[in-house]
Length: 166
Image (cartoon, rainbow, N blue to C red):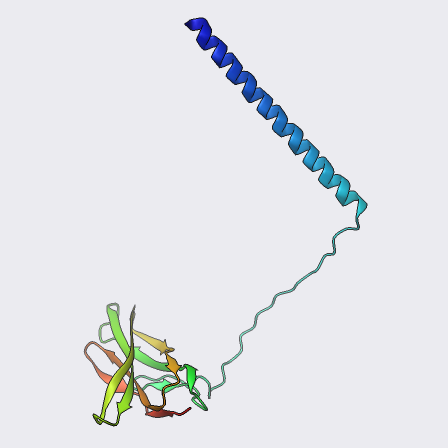
């Protein structure tokens, strides 16, 4: 029994050694071939790319200054579909505690003569004050809209109404 185990162990070691030698031979041949083909050709072209960044102020008509107590909207000229930018500043009544707030895109309903919820989004932050921004997508549905911003313990703030016409 002991001699049979020794024979199996010896043949397994021999097979492992053969695999290692074969792998080394293959790797050497591959490296040699790569070096040979690179020696014949011209060196690869080197392209230097320089990246730079600078701070550029955003145009005021595209990003109006946000202020507490009001919702400002980005440029709406010819808006039929695509992103709408709404901004405001929220001031926390308890700095250091979380502030949860919600955005709502409301559409005027002529049949009910009321503002109906069209899109909503919720977010939050921790701190004394923060400029908040929302970018809802307009879907090309003509009508009158407004953006509403609400937070717990604070009066809801609405933007001026705007018209989407396609």
